[in-house]
Amino acid sequence: MTNILKIAFTYTGTILGAGFATGKELVTFFASLNKKGIFSFLLACLLLALCCISILGVIYKTKAKTYQDFMHSIFGRFGKYIQIFNLLLLFVLFSAMLAGGGATICSMFNINHILSIFIFCILTFLALIYGKKAIVSVNTILCPILIIGGILIGIYLQFSTISVFNNNVKSVISPFVYTSYNAITTISVLFSIKHLIISKKIIVFSSLLGGMFIFFIGLSMLIPLINNIDYIKDESLPILILINKDIVKNIYSTTVLCAIFTTAVSNGVALQDSIKTYIKIKPIYIKIVIILLGVIFSSMGFSKIVSVLYPIFGYIGMFELIVIVLMFLSNGIDK
Image 1 (cartoon, rainbow, N blue to C red):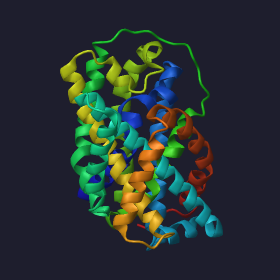
Image 2 (cartoon, one colour):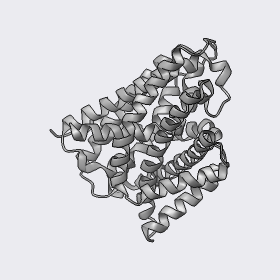
Image 3 (tube, rainbow, N blue to C red):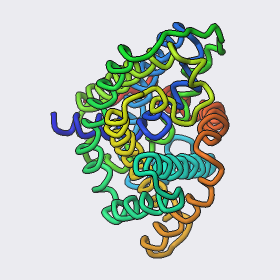
């Protein structure tokens, strides 16, 4: 049960980053679908659970000792190119977390934006020093806070906002694109905690539990976003815009910051491990470089990264996920 919870929290915490906790991802992919967005989001959560089962199952089956060997066992000689794609995606998401973390601290404490990003980078750097241990520790501690905070703020918004439905309808591809880029980022993270994957039961139940966590948090937040889509569709931090009481906004801002931090740490550790296979320098220098480059790239802006780059990576990454899922379905896992 301990391993099930640790994996479920890690999976959930990796996905519930800045885009999700602030509501920006939910608005981009689901809220503008109106009521259909709820069913679309349910499909996305089912797909995320299936992807998690497949990823964990393939990790368990291959018994690969390194991430590079793992990718090669799935994609053969194309594995190195898929690994580079995953590295780029991890970097984009890591940069988005730095941008989102800085924006949240700036909003909470009303301080200079550059100083806000600097503070968040220092916190992230300190966590990255602990490496893979930080992924499990940070997610196990903070993920329950995200789950409780996300559900409570959704309930609060149900009774404090006005219903204004929008008839904009998107393609049914939204849940697949959303699942694609989110699940891809978890591959290297889940591989880094492969020591927890010791049975078929752990693989199935941790994946289903993670999918349930994401669904209930997302559903509680998605409904008020749908109800107010015309009001918040162009906002960078839509959930925070809907909260009209300062004390509630500050409490939820803390929840958002926890969500951003868990994803930043998970992606940062996975990014560092991936870079190690290409550049042989001391880990401390890799941490410094990825944070500095992340800060530079984050100047693109949190909102633009989520609405423009996330979908692009989602479309491209579908092939990778399809291969992993098909490999899992065809080979299964040992008991």
